[in-house]
Length: 383
Ligand SMILES: Nc1nc2c(ncn2[C@@H]2O[C@H](COP(=O)(O)OP(=O)(O)O)[C@@H](O)[C@H]2O)c(=O)[nH]1
Ligand SMILES: [Mg+2]
Image: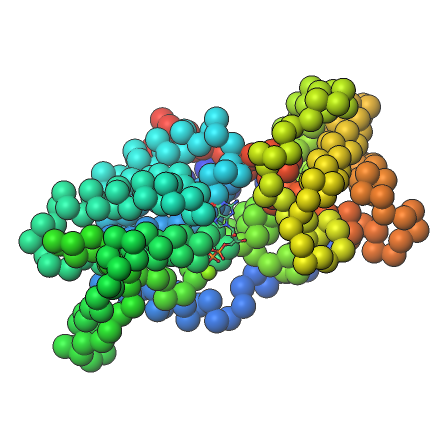
């Protein structure tokens, strides 16, 4: 992935405007990273030297923005599998284009969309990893695979699944020793890893830290915040929600909800038995029990209310969504409509913050539908 690509994405005028709009209010410079992340990058660089293959985990909702661009030279010189995780939250119609794009970037590199919580999905990833390694290296007795990625893309979830798969393949997990590359040549150390294959033995190593995401512009920062790679407090929930609404409106997404809402309002509900993965954390007072049917209906109703609010405000909107101040006006109306939808008392202090938090929770749980926020780079310009 070259600089040219970064430039193309960054100079997308319309999107850049969206990001900046959200930042017109108040502001000053944002300190995106806590300092300790820089140290982790150094640790990853050292560990990368040992790796025979790297699995770079990215968020499928932001396949480009969840990269660590300053580490790309090292990553792309490695045999690499780009794992677009959280595919369950990403638009399945656009995903194949991204996979084709990454596959075509380099012969050294493959791409696969995964759900880190699904064994089947992680098994597919491991098959690809084994295939890539066996194809090129059969003489080495031990091969190492390193998992890296920016915060919150699902590295721990993936490693957990790999651990479980490894334990079922090789119940007795052997330790391995590797020479370190570092200031003391020849020094060996134990490295923790999960054995996933034999002859050659393939071990998957946990990441020694998190990659620092690259944030060349506000828009990228907002995308990372929206998907949870940058903490909410860094940008503020209200700005993130404002950005989300800007994206939804400029894409005309709420207009697609008309049909959905009609169906639901007519009483044809989704089978609640099929979908039990609701994140009720921010929607209801804390409870210690699993969601029951009435909780599920509560969320479904809430989603309908929210979609109706956004659909109707956009439908009645007479301005131009491409115009910054028109769009800001629309978003203000939507905040008011959403406050009603969420049944937040009219005079509640911090009502805006509450609206923002609830809206973000719905989006992040995939309740507003699957999204891919980045644009696929132009196929013609792939070098
Ligand atoms: N929907 C969905 N959520 C995921 C997936 N993988 C991880 N997550 C969630 O994303 C959040 C961050 O995951 P985690 O493994 O801690 O990310 P890490 O910071 O990269 O280690 C957690 O809430 C996970 O449950 C996935 O494939 N789909
Ligand atoms: Mg983690």
